[in-house]
Length: 350
Ligand SMILES: [Zn+2]
Image (cartoon, rainbow, N blue to C red; front, side):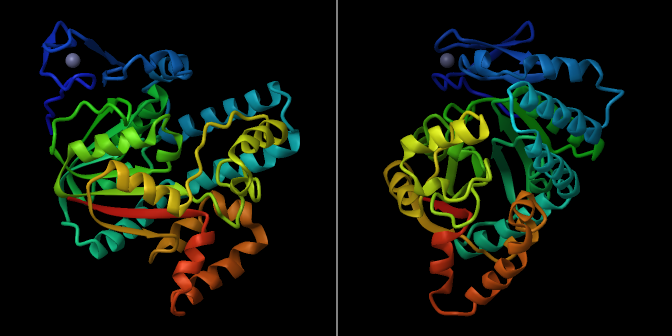
């Protein structure tokens, strides 16, 4: 797929000059970073992983994807200890690493399965021509999204994440994917040029999620669809980023303090309730049909092979049983959905 990018700032036409993209409208310049076009608007200074990306890029031929994953995780553990983090917490980190490695081949597949089921309910068209994965991270979903779309674009703000994805695509010999460094709120895409958009575990991190929804609405074609996956504020299970029980139930001001005190982490996550999310969606996105579920068909396949399973421990089994039971009871899904750890939203564009 060869995309004709537009300026993420003014949506003007870009021409290529001496390896850089130049906007005819606002005179902005965009360059490549390790062979990936960089359309971020001044975000570069917040990208704390540039040096890491460059280091890994220098060792490109020597490292496999899994080795890169392991190196990254050991770096995270080191930083955790340097910051005075609890050494006992490292056990969770080890489990996370193993869980990631075990699931990156399957989670995406299960994710796509959930997505297919939801899309069928909102009468989306499958397979799609062009799909964009916003916040593709290390490519775990993206690699499988390539099976439901003819061409896929992976977008992320983090240089290191896209480098990881690039490696994964190369190893798995997937060729129908392009990558771009860009912010979800400012996509370098023409209006109505995308048939589907996936945004997994990302919308809660956007500085302006409403602006992202407006941008998604601009880029999606009529009857295209948007698929989102985000942690539920009123989850009865541990919060997905920190593992803290009941975090979302606290007032937002307190959430930050609790995370800083107990986990020594920054907290830039906005936890949406189902109602809060719907309100934002209605004000920013021209939706024809919306389906939000906490327990779509097939969700067990990846919930219980992922980070959740580690956090849940002995609770995993009874919860799994509750999920399948609630599908058979009238109104059960609604109740479960209120307390579910994450929400899946499939939204048909108008
Ligand atoms: Zn421009």
